[in-house]
Length: 449
Ligand code: C2G
Image (tube, rainbow, N blue to C red; front, side, top):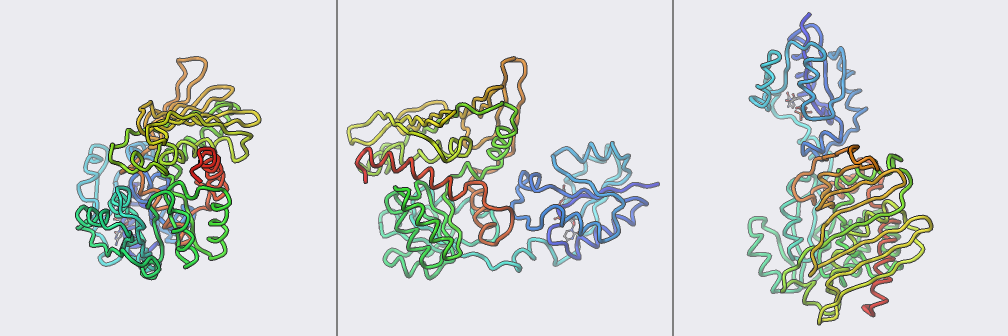
């Protein structure tokens, strides 16, 4: 009996998939089909899969060609499967020519001609209207957004808004290749040209820009801090719900796959009850940067606080009992370095942020049985360990992370807009509002608002 194996995502099942499976089956007597998990697809840079895995399996099954369906969830699995199932022929479409020649050492490799003019990517393009995105603000982060948006599907960044001519001049110079229209006068006019906005302007403008955009029925991805007061943040989420549009706070780490895995490990009970979370985020900012020159809204906390507070709120929850701050200030009166102590009924947490003080950017979650440590820079969560009293016992995790991480956040924003994927759990409105609550305590205490 000749055993054949093939793999695929089989998203939005189409004729190309059908013909491939038909010919794969004809290569032998028994066909095994490996269907990829969402996690594996995300790890190999496919963020845009629409059908859930059960539906994709069902579609493969309905062709009647597969004698066995398996799930593919990690790199290197093909080698395992071929040996495990005694496979004679490995086959894939001709878009993969050469990529799997190394499997010739184990079995015969056959590339089948790809069916022309049909693909999941094409179908994705026609199932949704492309979301036109506008950038509010034209600083460094807006530039990074443009570069990363190319890896997410379903959107086109078409315009930008900023009344600051100096910043617009730099943006036009640095981002000429993207051919973005820049509006410098009329925010309402700019909003008319887009379906969604990414707000990356200065902190104090986030709330107003977000509110106007939501009122105009636009989806909003807003940089942190979303607002300076809890009431404002609540108002924005209520407004988004009322208008039936998406509002997301852009705290990048929350949307990264590695961080999700870390949360799962923490919540699995492996390290017992959680008693302490320590998160540090520091970056020595350039002397001419806004966070170092703005005497009112500059400083480490407003710039990086959201990053360090996010894992605390995700792990210990929204209902803290008290928050205290301690800062080292500079001559402008903004904070170079701030420690935030948060007390919960049965646990505590510390967040440390620095823009002119550098420290180890790690995340430690301490429990009654052990602890999780995500090594610097934890916010990418490319590696973390679970460690115990017995120092010989270490479980090491190395989740995949691609690019600078923004593409995960952008993909999540698009998935929400298109109504695909899971419910909103990566950073909920409640968690984002709780983070704003801490921002409010800081801004009030220091007389910023
Ligand atoms: N295919 C085809 N003709 C098309 C489109 C796809 O023959 N017009 C084939 C692909 O070459 C592949 C299979 O259909 O062999 C499944 O395609 P995808 O769902 O796009 O999966 P892919 O990303 O190619 O997964 O481990 C996963 C595999 O490496 C391949």
